[in-house]
Image 1 (cartoon, helix red, strand yellow):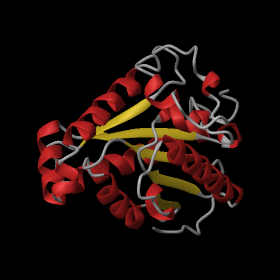
Image 2: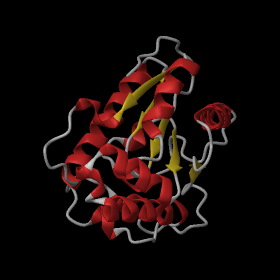
Image 3: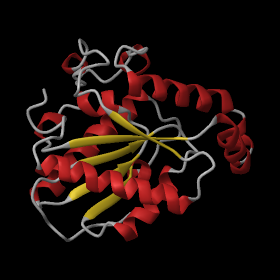
Length: 217
């Protein structure tokens, strides 16, 4: 989506996650103009198979973590928008090599999500229950690692290291997903909040306060 050329110390993988139609892609396009020191990419830009499954998402999550490591070697942050939740990012084989990880759940209420799915056409609206269920699961996962982990761990890629967080509880400071609710908000306001989130997480990393800095595992 947009490469970055402005290097700095302590790069971070910033991930915007969540179910479809919450506004992630729209916000990513805005961020590409507002954050010149950050490379902005969409998870699906590498290509999506006809029937994407969990294995595909696991493999592609690792691919993007490796891409983040390439940017890290250049001193560049990566802002990635997709649907991989915190638990998948942490379980990716190469995740411990990242200098910093920060995850934001971009969410929206069910009614506007349904309206946006309807605008996409019949194919999306036929699966509306699946989209709403996935959104509800994301909310629970963001709060507590013990919330139905089998949704992402069952039938997953054998290289995924779920054991890294399997024994964590909701009060573990490393289990942290910020939430940006776009319901009823203009894009400009959500974009400003997302920009503030990126800058705040970056500052926390430089100050040694980012909970998912290298060594978290």
